[in-house]
Structure formats: structure tokens, C-alpha cells
Length: 52
Image (tube, helix red, strand yellow):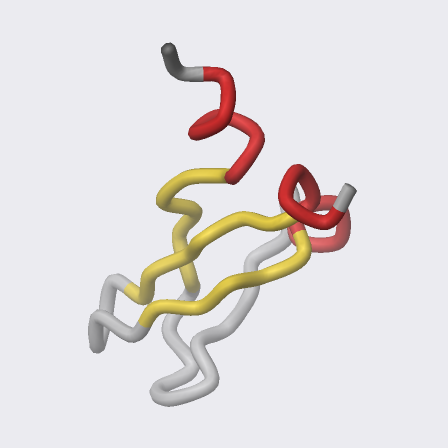
């Protein structure tokens, strides 16, 4: 299912947001496409769907 394989990330440097594939980016320092600072995971669809 597509929804559980996505994570939302935000750049600490410039604030850019990106939707990235969770299974490929977990534990990997992904550079921001705008400024090359590292992206930080904000939330995943899986965690959001698990909330009541």
C-alpha cells in the first residue's frame, strides 16, 4: 500500500518539505534539494493512520 511507505520530511536549514519513500530513506541522511542541508523526518502515513 502506497500510503504506508511514505514519510514527510522538512529541511532544518530552509524549511523545504518533501514526501519521500520511507523504506528507502529510513536511517539515511537525505540532503535537501534546495540547499543541501539534511532533511529530518516529520511524520509517516503509517503513524498518522494508527492514531484514533
